[in-house]
Image (cartoon, rainbow, N blue to C red):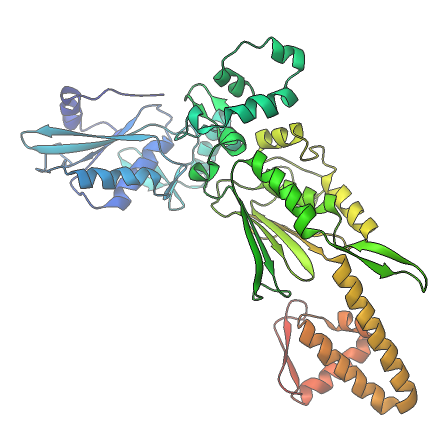
Length: 491
């Protein structure tokens, strides 16, 4: 670390050094935007000087003092710049004050970040000579390449605010080490605990603190350091977020504890089964979801999520499906055109740990096996959503709900067929219209093709009825053909 010991003599010399590009001066005590931009620019250190930057508060551009009187409230306010979440990743900075005859001086000393680009409210500020500017694309690329050369992945960056006392070391020693290290080697390993942690990328000896992976996996309270590091489960009544909340649960703690609880929760609270007929005299036990598939999808969300986001993993259950979503889209070599055949790891240390503990399949077979398990169980294939920037989701339909829906539709079609035979074409049209309205009421996003499949008539026939219903002012359609919805006006 590049620490500089400041004293009054050195500060006085720096006040008069008007040529230094590592110093910025201001008389304002309230312009937090200016302060934060300066901290951000010094953190990024685009010229790669490897020198600390200094923001002098209470000093004019010519180096003379403004007569500032420092208060504890002002120092506390400036200290909040580091942790208020506007400068990310958090800067490495310290604040000191010195008193001179002409007034007080506050100095915010900022070290070059090993993890650039550092952004203030989404903008990357840099020093261009003696002034600040927002980095362009090429300048950001230089900073990103420098970060990659230092530490490329979030999970192996040091968690600066944490110490080894913030970790459950018994969990590491008794549960993880025996699985990760050969028993003979472990028996002869005489290194202290910090060195053992560091060997597995859970501790950074240079900064003398745990890594983010170490806190996520073994932390006593990971959410204190990584606010979004939890899983939110909600069960809704019906098919949308507008339904009443039937159950809600927050899975928090370190990942080893979370993963254990999620496994049990899936088995006990998510998976249900019931007998369904397969012939007149036979029936089989049908599960709504295969245990392993839902478990694997949840483990993937935990492993691949972007832990720099404050949004939790969302595990939502509806009458007809479950949805799992996490911050962080496709990563690295994975692209929409090659998913799921190509995979990459945003959190390689966490991925390795989860494999060591037996929670995930790291060798790119997970998604393929999920689809196989769903097919065997009678579910539709899982639908993955990765077209939204910075987000990834998966949707799995409930096999029991689908069976009951198909069974109900089949009975309606059978009744419709019998009525049609006895009452002729006029009754047939009336019945089809009623079925169309009933299906639209249940799901107003159904397309003409989907309606035709459910009713058992041609898509052309469905469109004929839809047009008549629209002309009669009974229904209308809002939005595009594929993603719009039906609105029932009257009946």
